[in-house]
Length: 179
Image (cartoon, rainbow, N blue to C red):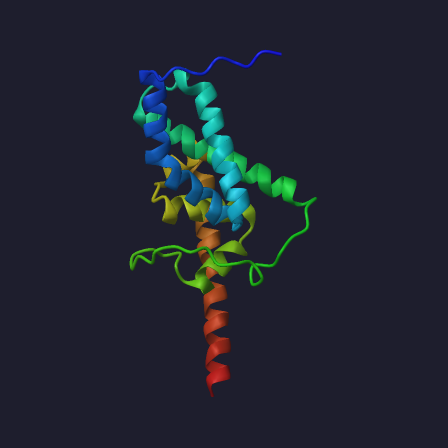
């Protein structure tokens, strides 16, 4: 068998490499916040960029690119959750913490909040991640997930209600322990 010819460096390849550099953090972040598994998040990111390389010529502009990357990342992460059911699972408490440079404005830095978000149902969890991690508006989330904006608002409202209730229970439990 003959070896495939090396891909010559072209403007398209240079553009692709720049896109990977610019958007890899966003893709990885969505996957990690949804999956809470570094290896799976890296695998999802790799799959997304492989798919991007295949579909590179069909993308229209930078706005379309970002939307495409988010949408594909969301679907790949959801696919990983579905596939995970057949794999052994490690509890969130046993999983190693991801080394991240702390930012004061990052709402996901609190370990408790990360655990509470991770405990949300998968659909609600993705809406929360896209809304607060990626700072997308409900209409944008609806486009990425392919669902009506009203459904996004409902899921977001329910997810926030669940988080508030969990936070209240945790705070109440903490007050009883400190007495």
